[in-house]
Image 1 (tube, helix red, strand yellow):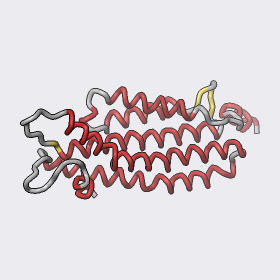
Image 2 (tube, rainbow, N blue to C red):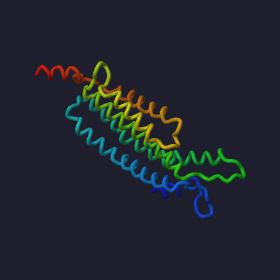
Image 3 (cartoon, rainbow, N blue to C red):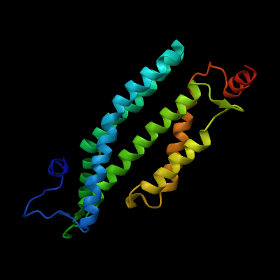
Image 4 (cartoon, one colour):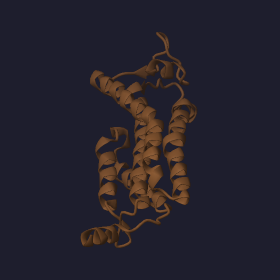
Length: 212
């Protein structure tokens, strides 16, 4: 798949067109494993949505069920499609744009193959983490896990999402990791706040259980 993608990029490849280079063999191995992990996560997202819907459906009201179906469709179907178009058209467009406007005449420019793939992996990983964060935060709300007007475990989930991105984003995103991580976590939290809440709040449920 890596070879197919590189051969379909705007860069001319082959023995007489040395436009791509690999500067670190170990980085190349890391990229290959990373792409395997990203593809695996994207592949299981639709199955995850089906399993989550089957699990949550009996305990949801019709309004909650419709909202949750929409969220699962966006996070586990639309996001993988966006990632596909990113690899198929987005990154090649950036390469073509840099070829047309970012090179000097008479200067031979070589691109680092691992950096190009790492850039796409980083953006894909950001979208995957955002999808999972939205799903988890939404589930805590529609199941009534509310404490003092705030989603229970909200701060922990946001901290986990933020820390995951800061620690795992490639070096190509250096200098923007914190900003990207906070943006992903807060936007996921904002999106999940649209979830309808009609179930008993968490504190009320605990209070009633203690009396029973």
